[in-house]
Image (tube, rainbow, N blue to C red; front, side, top):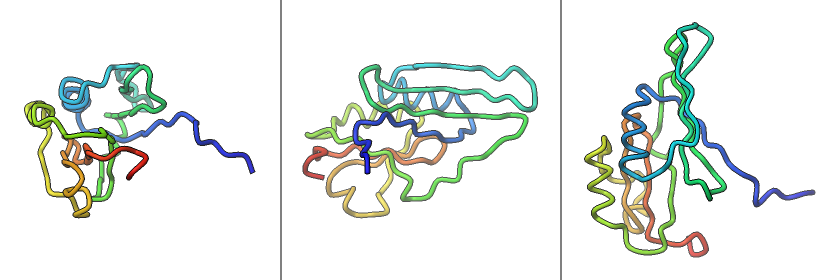
Length: 136
């Protein structure tokens, strides 16, 4: 069977408020806006915001459909984990909080031991891990 270990990944999520999400992910974390599509007012259409780093093999897609909304329903285990391979900069956590995030205790104590968990404006959790991908 063929493996796809280097396949690009798109993580898609609904959002209540794309402007609030953009402040958190772009101004807070430092992702770039890769693509934006504004809602044109038709019921079948939606607004879309794709965020990421240009050299990454993944990006985050946030969608809001005012005509037929799907509300975010994150659980405590819906995590996006970034492996920083070193200490989590306190100024990064503060910037995330200043841009709509909220530092929370992790559901799984492993993540509190190895990083910091910040909840985004839609309730999804971002873990900034001190570990590297290879020793996770």
